[in-house]
Image 1 (tube, rainbow, N blue to C red):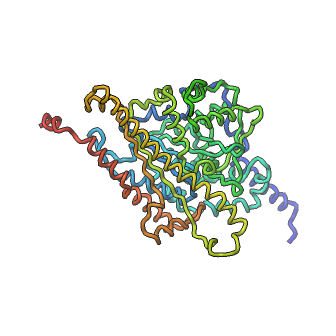
Image 2: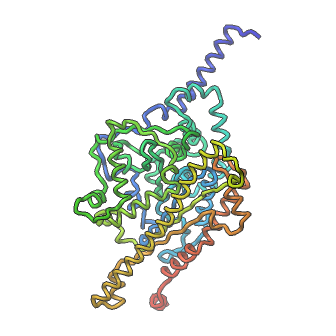
Image 3: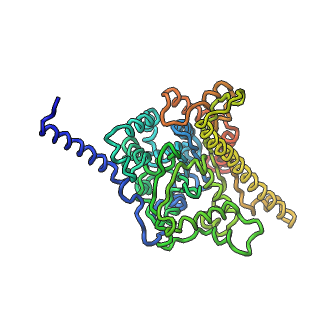
Amino acid sequence: MKQSPGSQTQLVRRMTGAVAALVLAGCNSFAPVNPPIDHVDLDSGYRVGNMLKRTHGVKNDADTLFLLTFSGGGTRAAAFSYGVLEELRRTSVMVKGQPVNLLSEVDAIAGVSGGSFTALAYALYGDRLFTEYEPRFLKRNVQGALTWGALNPINWFALGSGLYGRSEFAADYYDQILFGGATFDDLIDKPTPVTAVTGTDLSTGARFPFSQDHFDLLCSDLGKVRLARAAATSSAVPAVLSPVTYHNYGGTCGAVMPAWVKDVTKADGPERPAGRALLRYRDIQSFQDSKNRPYLHVVDGGVSDNLGLRGLLEALEEVEASPAFQEQVGLQHIRRIVVVVVNSRSAPDTDWDRRAIAPGIVSQLLQSSSVPIDHFSYESVELLKDIAQRWADKRELAIAERRLAGMSKAQAEASVLKLTFDAIDVSFDEIHDPEEKRYFMNLPTSFVLPDEAVDRLRALGGKLLRESPTYRDLLKRIDATNQPSKQGAAAAQ
């Protein structure tokens, strides 16, 4: 039927209005998303170190630094890490004579890709997460909504603009269903653990952490960056989703080098310098070159670190290599470091090795990207355990040296910092039942799973943490440490 001029005008107006609404909804994506700063203020902003100093020991045990890392893996990772949070919340321990849930003892959470959603959502929601996260995100067909949104002609104008990629579209959707436009400034006064999520610099492969310390290098304000954009960046799988672009103003605001840089770069330093720290220093120099790198294109954090563990490993090496950094982070006051690595790595079954015909190009691409990531993740966990053992060995060596110098055993032990280091690995590799293990290893890396799979992942996260021998031993030691002494009990009577 032929339309009248009036009806055609109304149709054009409706279409124009719809496009305008889309542009307005995504205005944060079109506008500069990380505004510049003209000077660095080390006392302001969402800085991991500053946030830890402000919260650690205030509402929890000052002797313990409790850290969680959540791996990538889409909804599989989000649900698995959420199950670990639930288990920590269910676990009651005594701290300084008061019963608390173990989740309240967590100081920091690092998240990558799928794990970044759980980390950021808990930082924003706190205890509300345990009533809202499941319906808002875990049991929602996020992938279907993003796919249909990209296919909807009303969105083609923005998606074809070159300024609003698929990841920007995803970020706006994440705001709609989960983050509500919140920015990193909104996290500063939250009593929740400090959260560090990361992406990967597409040009150099360097980690791109969402901390003001890193954004100082870009001479930019992290506080105005939306949490949804950080989550979209950390989960921007190359080729599937578009890179997320950030403005780089580096070298224009007098950024201050971290305390460890001087120690690891000095000419008269040890013959074998801290390799990870030196690599990070080179990355720092690259980020400050805004003349040649005015734009930074950032993709999935899992490309450089699928466990969210690399930043911690670098920090531990920097602590070992730099006395100045040790003093800055206040390590001398900590008696116990706990790191729980939540790894939702999957390994789908294939029959490639039983066929003469090689797998297709898509399968090759997927396998060639996932295998190196999985191997690096395994090595990262083992390296963390090696560091824990090395610190324990150093303490025993220091005690032995003091004994040889004439100290008694009690004097020698009292004179050396007693620091325990617990590395707890929660992963599908710890599943004993072959059929159950196969089920979880074959879950896809996507942002939609059946409700049953989400429920099973949550239950599994709690179960594997509960059954971890290292975790059970940790709970016993926490309990023993916080038991009142016999003398104190007698005095109370």
